[in-house]
Image (tube, rainbow, N blue to C red):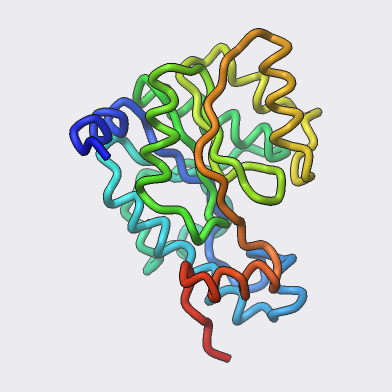
Length: 216
C-alpha cells in the first residue's frame, strides 16, 4: 500500500458512522433472538470498539449518525465524536442524510455501519481510493448488501439511497448497481466482507479470528 496516497484518500473523504446507541434490548435484534439481550449487547459493544479504533486512525473528518439515548455512548469509544441524530424514515433516508452531511465536511463521503467485524483500515482505504475515479464506491457484503457506500458527488446520492431499493435484502447491491449502470454512472467495488447479524455469522467471525469470543 502507498501510505502517502492512502492518507490523501482519507483526507479527501469524511467517514460517516451509522450506529445505534448501545442499549440493552435495542441492538442487533436478530442476533439477540438466539443469543439473548445481554450477550448481544456485549457483542455490539465489542463491535463499537472496533469501529472506534478505525475512526481513531482515519485522517479525514469523522462523524457519528445516531439513534438512542445520548448517555449510552459513554464508554463506547465513540463518545468524543461529533454526533447527529438520524432522521426519521427508512435506512435509505438515514444513509442519504449521512452522505449529504459527509459531503459538507469533505469532497467525498464514505458511510459504514457497525455490523462488520472483518472491517479493517485497509478496506476503508480501498473504498476511499475508488472515489478518486468513480462517483460511487461500494464495500460489498457476503449477504448481497454492502458494508459501505461512498460518493464523490451529491448528484448520485438519490440513486443509491432511494426508499424503493430492496433494503435488508440479498439483492440490494445488485439492484443498486443496475440503477447506476442504467444511469450511465460508474462505480467501484471494494473487498467483499461478512456482516455479523446471526449466531452463525458470529460463530464464523470468531472462528476466522476477526472477533473475540463473548463469555457466557
